[in-house]
Length: 131
Image (cartoon, rainbow, N blue to C red; front, side):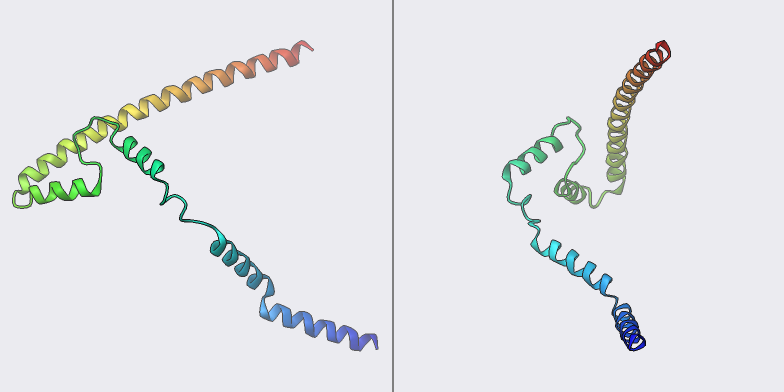
């Protein structure tokens, strides 16, 4: 009798392994989450659009910032590849300067954080040694 039950359990477990129930349940749960999540909330938020537009237009660089501006500039210089290359060179220089300034600011902030962390670590060590 126990042999018959153990055989039945072995067959059922092999059937479940064959169907890969765990993978099926994982896919079903992920599908349910994807189908029930509201992914369109950002598109209808006009305030978010305005904030993004302001941040894009924030810097005073004269180079194009949107695809529409890039396309307009490409149409303006369509027949003159020399002028197009000259503009690309100027815009690349502006972008590099802008990137460099952001890199310097980030490095300064990081250095300040490292300095503060080192000072705190020194205080912690002196407190633990003093005990």
